[in-house]
Image (cartoon, rainbow, N blue to C red; front, side, top):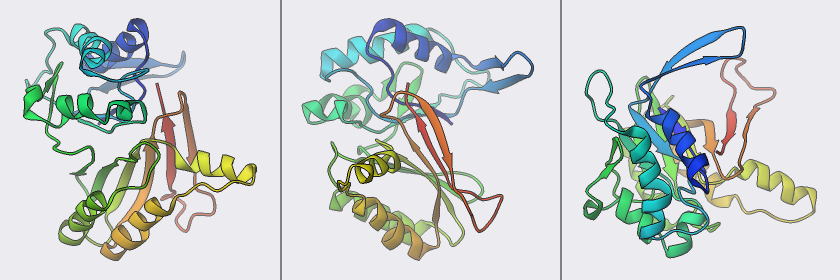
Length: 243
């Protein structure tokens, strides 16, 4: 799985991210150790695919074209076409999600994005992964609550397909753990009730537990790890990974 959020607001920044995402293999080094990593079967866009405001022309110029140029005629060694799933961020919502829906959720957009294909039909999704893991993508809808239709979608998935002991990677459009801490610091209230409801009233009855929170929105990488976990080797991770 590859994860990209906040792709960039200009050609150089967006193309540089697309360039590395399009490579079948990367060799990473910190000067002492070297690691090889291969491209994912799935690309997750974590929000804010276009800056500063969306639209069909803006999506073409600021997102599709840089990725198409970076990907070129590349394909992986098995000739398998990877898939892309996308969450909208606040910037993607500025046109009512029209451009986002056309590219990622509608057959009008041909379902092709550079070297990837889209399969989602909504602005949120659930992916069943191997070994009892799930990846849920939840649309925060421009700082508002998760809507009822979305909650019922996840409720059906949890009730009919999840098993006790399943673990969840929850992708959301903004790192709520950062914002709620900041709001409390200044004596203000930040509403997390919808996410708490998703965890406690939908996932927990099915025996599933969120172990990884993954978000963009803030333009840096930062990881917070659970303290005083019941299981030392099973700490909850909260990761911000914005481009």
